[in-house]
Image (tube, rainbow, N blue to C red; front, side, top):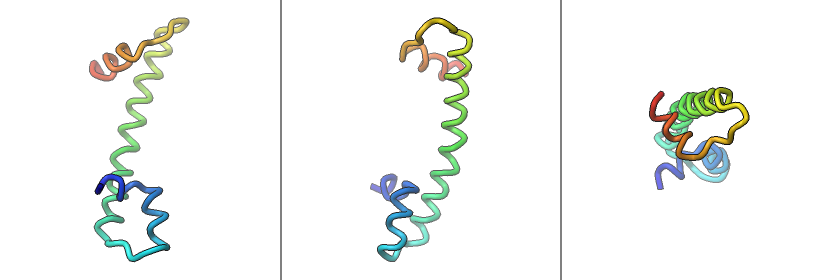
Length: 70
C-alpha cells in the first residue's frame, strides 16, 4: 500500500484533496529519483542489444539475460 501511495501521480492527485503527511511526499520523491536512473539504465541496455541484433527480434528471455549480464 505504501508504494501505491507514494506514486508521483497519485501524490499529485492527493495533495489538493486532503492533508498529506510529509513522509508520503518525501517517499514519493525518493521513489521517483531512484526509478528514473534504473529505467534509463535498463532501457539503454535493451536498446543496445537491439542495435547489436539488427534484423532479429529479441525474445523476453534474451532481454532478461542481457540485463543480468550488464
